[in-house]
Image (cartoon, rainbow over all chains, first blue to last red; front, side, top):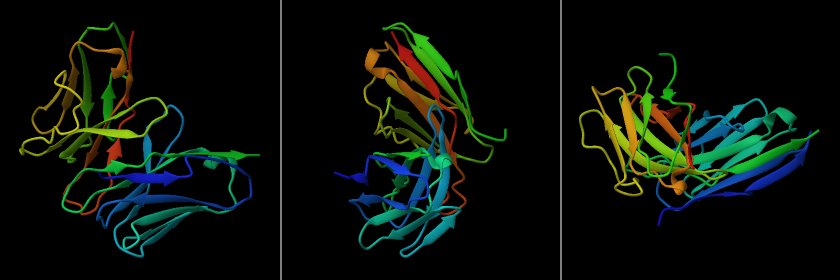
Length: 111
Length: 115
């Protein structure tokens, strides 16, 4: 059974701290996506990672992909309150078109 | 339109009634997806449309759920004889299949409450 697992599921952190969210998946895929969802809102695309070793950065967020380990990370640097949201990773198994979403990580940054 | 448009944004219905949810994707986004998100949960794949190909209905939870896409653009998700467990946000997303590896763009969702 295909699994896309994120950890932690919940994360409460202080402003200014660093932390990493992990996304593990159980199938072959060379594409991985990160999304952000604010409460009561839809999903917003953050990063598209299309190859092994891909690294993308935007502001205080940096995402990377290791297809051999079937692992992606979303690193938060010097967190600020505005980053509070739920973050989802999504995998498209090779040879398919389905975006399979992870369980989500609910991040709360405390002032 | 500029973005993915979904309607209604909110729907409260009585158990046993039928509901229709509509999605109007971004122009040119011929790949269209429906997902369901229950409160505090992740996204559950429901159905996928691509051009004139037969849709992938493998995620539909029961035969009470159906979807169609007219003219390769607007899509309607229909839930017959609604049950309380159908209460969720139904999200539509589209993608331009001509762009390799492209992400999918979501609408704001239709919040369905079955009472």
